[in-house]
Image 1 (cartoon, rainbow, N blue to C red):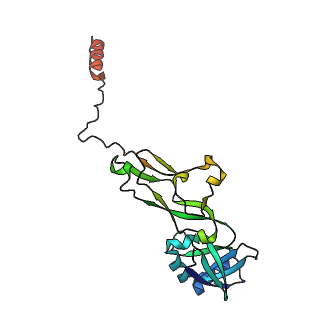
Image 2 (image 1 turned 180 degrees about the vertical axis):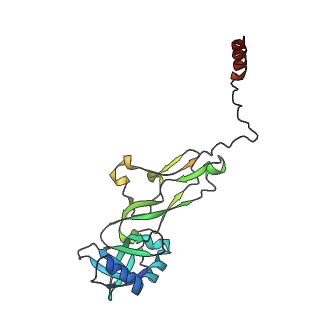
Image 3 (image 1 turned 60 degrees about the vertical axis):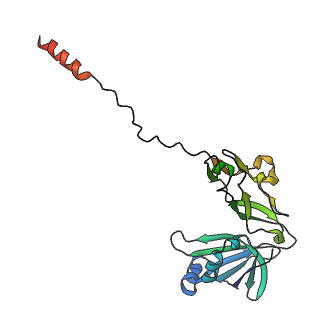
Length: 224
């Protein structure tokens, strides 16, 4: 896979929460770290606007990124993004160095196709439920896919799609399946629609406790 994303970064020496807050507040920058390979980890800063724009593209999360650090470029993948819980702010990024000759372990999104024409939906009126939205994979950087398609066209009502049912691109392997068939997890299923309540159906009336008449008879007996 070619490198289509480039980010420019600067090395930084200031660390800690205070330094990170100053970066975001005063310079509009984000603290980050790049690690892996045979080099030591390096602390970085990137412009928030550049990162925010890149993160709008789904491919950025599973793509080789050319990271330019003070004029020196290296290939990386994004490993982690920390976001503010309430504001539209990116707080920190983690990048992992990649080698052309070394398999990398990462996650890629799953794209479900032909759901509306699948057997279980079209003829059975079923509802598609996703139990997984991304897949753990291993591959060489050149084989890294932006996403993996899951074709739902032949899936019937009540049928479960497992990882082993996905057609993986050449050179890509599932991390879960590498641990054995007992790790063949569910990816999606087509469930039966919930039964709708019958229109006009009336709940059974509550039974009436005839204690009042009993009280009257008791009352009459006492008066005698």
